[in-house]
Length: 129
Image (tube, rainbow, N blue to C red; front, side):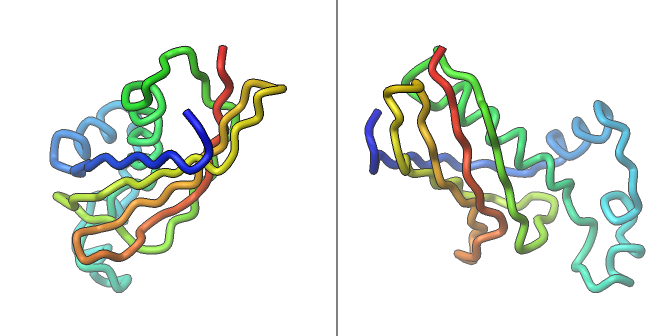
């Protein structure tokens, strides 16, 4: 893997992902579970939990990279638009730098919805173990 390498993956926030997140983490905040509550606050419907996207990041690092000897060292995510149930998101990542001396790779990434709008972006640094 080298600087400039690009990766792309598609994720869907379907009911299985949504319900699984709630079942595991017990986050039933009404913004995420009550459509009327969310609509009263200016959203189209229930807003999906932002940390679902963190799960997709973990999947990308653990399953989509050609290397398996990796560990996430740091991860940053900035949310810019809400994600709703059944949203299809395209994840795009690019290697920004490779630090051979400390066995570390840095990625910049973003999630984009089907309208082409970025819903979240950030950086991830992984270590080679």
